[in-house]
Amino acid sequence: MDKNRRFSLKTLNIVMIIIAASISAVLFYTMLQTSKINNDADHVTQDLISSKNSAYELQVASDYLTEQVRCFVITGDKEYLDNYFEEAKTTKRRDNALAELEKQYGGSEAFSNLSGAMAESTELMQSEYYAMRLAVDAYGYDISDFPEEIQAIKPEEWTAALTPEEKKNEAEKILFGNDYQKRKNSISKYMQSCLAELDAEMVKVQSEAAARLDHQVFFEHLLTILLIAVLLGNVLITSLLVIMPVRKCVKLINDGKEIPEKGAYEIAFLAHICNKSSSSKS
Image 1 (cartoon, rainbow, N blue to C red):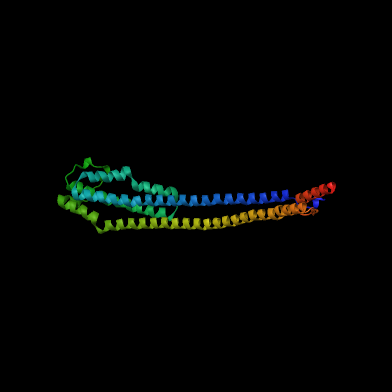
Image 2 (image 1 turned 30 degrees about the vertical axis):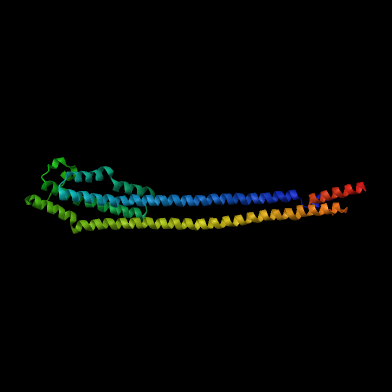
């Protein structure tokens, strides 16, 4: 019996194991990549949501400043003015919002729009300072008790002849007038553009992630089918080359017939040994 002319079940089994192991390794790597893509997309989405929330804080802070300065001018309650400067100089939500967005999207259109909103809000503060200065005079406060920003404001000469009530009315005109509202609207437009840009970026990231995930899932399905095919092929080969030949050999042995020395090396070798043993007994 020539071993070199026959294939070996051992070799075939090793080849099948190597193929199955290789496919399994690639499939495992692909699954890790799928998880990574999903995690990366989720991370970027969370960053965008956080950036949107931070950006929106600028609008909230700007509206808060407007509310406090208007309340001070209308009521004369110094607590509102203190709240205003607490926000502007200590809490600084507008500055923090701009800084947070700059970390993630410093060169983006969204950051540019948020910077525009911040610039408008800062410009608006000059009108608010002037209105507060008129209100300070109208309510008879000592100007030295107020922040430097208010002390630095020099009312126009014509306001000196106004009564306290008229000064209050002038302050209210500044805060409720068309020019003031136009700047507030400009801040809102910048904010809407900023948030729209962030929304568009979020859609883009999610769309790209979805496309990559579709590709990964397709590849995973393909590898899974190949792995199943290899496993089924291994079962079929085992059945055809091992189980069926062995059963046939058993039947031939029971019938006292010679076993054909063919097929896989291991099966042919066993047949050769069985035939030799039967010949010796005869």
